Length: 173
Image (cartoon, rainbow, N blue to C red; front, side, top):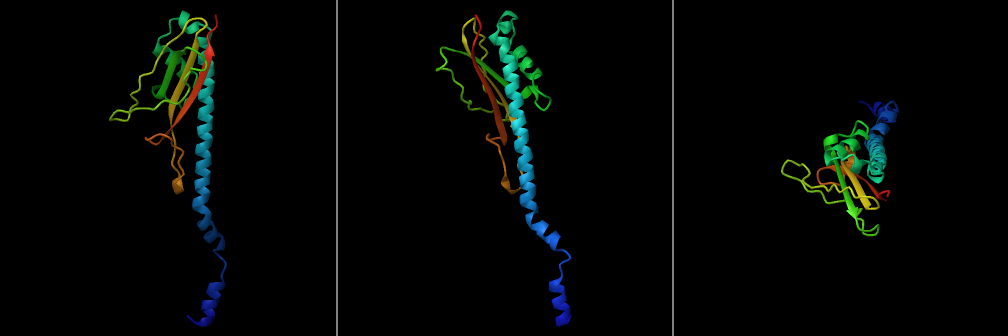
């Protein structure tokens, strides 16, 4: 190959766009995947909060107490208020009576797991009477997709994100 042919080869710009795209493709796709993952996370959180708002009214108005709802029936009511991406088996409902609003525990619990990765926490189900202060926490382990360039929103050791919605209220008289 002569000197002239080498210079012509170096000056060619046919594949410039392909080379430039190859340099920015990984960060671009990482950003797209992270954006979609974060959007799904926000949609899941909003759906969980809406379900807690709806089902906490069963306790607030005394319907859960007068209807004799068991813990599993109440959990099913929460599940029925959630959209299809949520699996009923993954919903964790903790309902406790508090002595005061300032003493109500609204923090996220520390989840414990068995050898198979199943949550072993025991959740309370205390439907208080009229005028009692109730703390309802509903949790769900939301699956997240780790994207390229190690973008990952997981906040649990099992690679999932703990969604949690809390409602603190005083039962109607």
